[in-house]
Length: 328
Image (cartoon, rainbow, N blue to C red):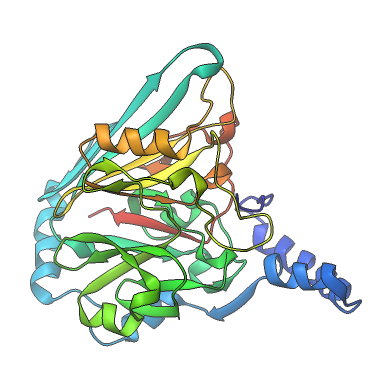
């Protein structure tokens, strides 16, 4: 679903510069190939040092009482191999395996309770907003002191969708079903084409994801989800069949469930269809659930390590962004 990422963390940025230089030469030749390279491969940074940029935006930092709470609870944070607790925030990670032989499916579940909705944050690869800028989920997580993280919606592979992250608007090009995380702890699927980023901010939205489709309608498996096309990008139309997948589910206000399904690895995990993913989310008790970027990008990270085994190779593929919880 997303283009392959071949660089590792060490030396990756240097290689990207070299690759970009070579591609720039190719671009000068013109034609469709040059356009495709520019559109889908060459990095285009629009905002660098995003952390500093977000801190400079009015209303994007937590209030003093929240900061004090984080300070007061940091000493009581408890981490085990599969759980994290700090104050009223908790993460519990579990592994589920079903089926047998080539029909085996292995997926990973993170049950997350937040003390405050803004505890769940977003971060961009290389702390930079723009197109075709990627980094491994674990690398982005480490840069932001994350105890838990999953891959995001790979916003940088498309130029449409509403992108609001940590209360800051980055893009306002509604195109599909989106998912909105509100500061009051609610999470809703919405139609991007019927609103604006400005209105969402006014309504209290903290983060958005733009991928889809929505998997559940009032707790029931949504119809037509096997036929959805995420967008019209070349090579990214279809998300059908048994695939590695990542999804977000809503149990209640400030109570979420994240699922990463491994796939394309017969005997370990075949992956699931969109309907199969919806069934997993329903069985976990979610009333709302939403599919985000999958394939080789599907990654869950906890306490310094990969939780899942991407493509059965224990090797990550880069992504544009993550959702994460920072360690207190």
